[in-house]
View 1 (tube, rainbow, N blue to C red):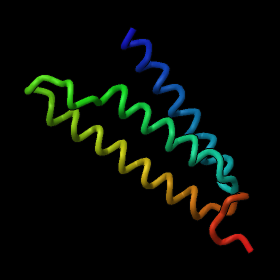
View 2 (spheres, helix red, strand yellow):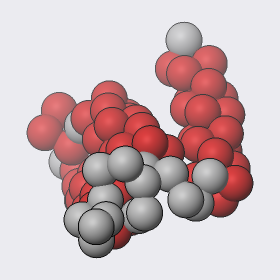
View 3 (cartoon, rainbow, N blue to C red):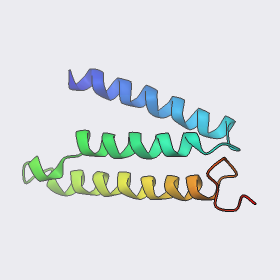
View 4 (spheres, rainbow, N blue to C red):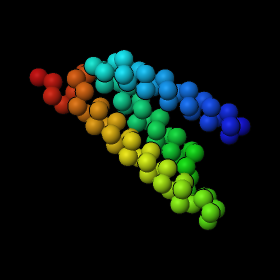
Length: 88
């Protein structure tokens, strides 16, 4: 089951990245990537439940997902979409 979820996670991630590249003038794809990345980080990198041997590496991957989400929030905030900060 976990292997299947990881395959689906990779497919969704790749599809979202292509949407982000193709729809760079829209605000939706970055927000979808924020939601997806945070959900994936919570589901797959739960360092609080990991054993001592993998706790550090899971923690690194979890915080990596949080930082990627921060970058996507910046892309959402500064994209020229409907909810753009710089829209006049």
